[in-house]
Image (cartoon, rainbow, N blue to C red; front, side):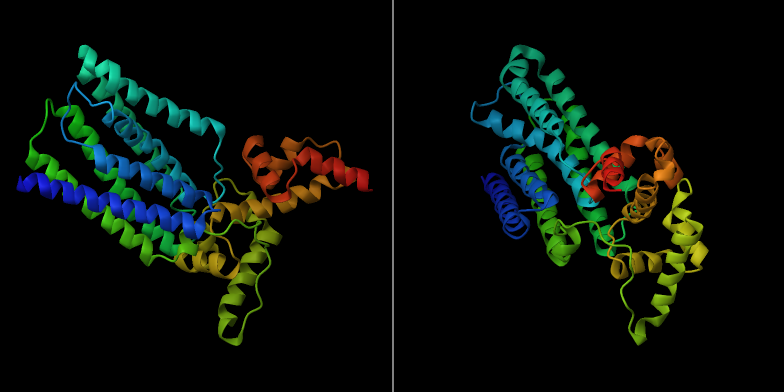
Length: 351
């Protein structure tokens, strides 16, 4: 009886914290995609806290199945949340919704038909392999975008948020695959307690980080002009001027796979200082966006040049430093509002 009450208390605490976090995100940052996905992830995690049990069973109550399905589909939301949280250019696509729907529907079918039909181990194993796959995608996205992130507090927060959620979800998925039958009250109580502690820690971590760092207001692309320096900032201004000369005169953004570390080496300063300068003085949150804006400025000039009217768009894109046409078209339209071809036509007609 004591273990049952303790488990219920842990579950209730997790659900309450997650609902509070969702309300907070929607209240303060409802117009920001990452915040909306964070709220959706919180709600899905609340479904997980209310429904998850260690071990498996072929019998699932009708009212319990939708909660389990939402909990499973929440791994897709987690993947999308990590993408939006650490990639300011990420946009939600219609097919993302189809992926969520497919995973959720498969889990529901597994609960109501596959498992009761005598295939419980197959159903549970497939579902949890899907969970592990999306956790791997989320972790890979976080690691791959780490070096380009210029917001120091967000860089620190991502480690804890993603690591804690991925570790908990991954261990539970492995446990579900390996454990047969129904686990005891002790295992479920421990799991509920660990989840409550992780939820509390994530909520605390997110409250300690300025919301503007995690969830910036949706604005247009920053300009690539440095802010005037005060006397105390003269050293930083000299570095900004040197950086802009590298971009304007040597066009280092054209170099393939140019990194912020390599650029810091050219300026003979630590990498963290260059991150701070580009973020706090020039207003960029992502190093790739900083590079792409310079590339797009060069491409705009080439597209508007009558002497280059016959030059293919792909040639202009690659000369500016893009590796393929798709990313160039997306980045160009995000900055200008039109495709490169439309931009060229508009400039030609304006002459």
